[in-house]
Image (cartoon, rainbow over the protein chains, first blue to last red):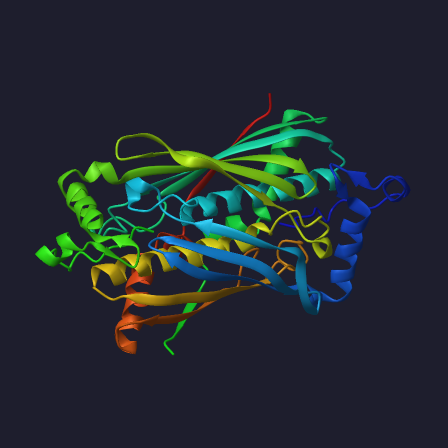
Length: 199
Length: 199
């Protein structure tokens, strides 16, 4: 997500030419300064609303969120379908839920990378990644109690080009990993509460 | 995901009228039986390809996967943009990566619920959920080392209607949670390997 490198400092050149990699670095540093002054502004709540359609097909809408002290909405409402492919007894109206996890992780690492590169004055020309997750469905099918339900492992392979030596480009990825919200959720543990209303 | 209740058994009526909640229960039980006979068929690999566009804006495509012993493709290629909203120094071309996590969890629990309800002969008429995740961005901004990068907590609130008593409807959710791939990834820990190529 909004990963920044707080060790970089703003210069006059930065203020005069603040856009790098499409990142408004002046706005990025201003945001960091604002949160330093008012840490509670960084308390966010994100949300999705999901509706079952039929079988394994369901649809989420994402619009409102809370942040910087008030309710906000995205510029438009985003709608995503999820389903299973035929081989998993679905109708393939959308990716599987676990594929959206892979998208989330690749997107988070990449967004952070662009911010960190901008803060470190590295111009990126290309960032691509392939992310794969291995899963043994004997877990969720209930056929083998020794197999977990989720991914056994996830691998991300980045290809990165920019105006910096290879070790500096690699360090961008490492810093993005170290400050990635989705990486933390997937490699760490988040408490989930489920409530059910049956009107 | 493809959560099934293996304690339910197939009957002649099931074979004659196998569709419930849009779930082809005959196909579901046939799949379970096939995997029981050949457990290696349940080894799947899902993938996404991500390309950086500008700033925090990037795009994933999801098309191919491996399962039941061979390479497969979805019926179409799915494309998803992710970005940050303006308040997080982005241009709001898509939801944030952490919002896709919420969609993945709600979708996984809901797909499982529909399968389990079908296996238990419960007809669902409505399943809705609101999922929210609380996150303190002091973590990813690097401003407070005691704050984690990811969600502090996630809450899912289901509203479920169907032709079963409330306790039976609640039990469907509990079984779906117990067999959810995404719930396991978020509440557990998955090893993630990141490789970087700098051509």
